[in-house]
Image (cartoon, rainbow, N blue to C red):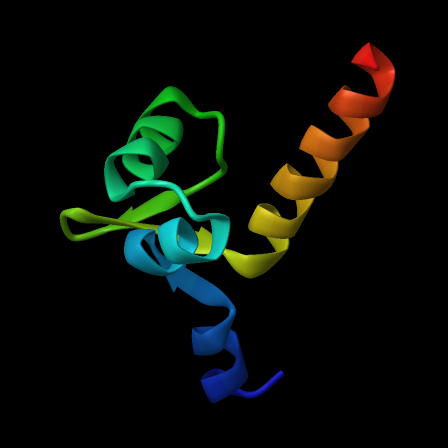
Length: 67
């Protein structure tokens, strides 16, 4: 994987919020709570694209179990 591709695979809170159509505050809260796997660079949270995809899949699996 190239360095450029690796950079594209790391998302900012704003990118995650836009993708999920939730507020920036919601994404930050999920990061702090550990609900969404994330790491900090400086003061800002970052999310690996693969972790976000896993989070989304996990949510779908929970919906199926509950439904």
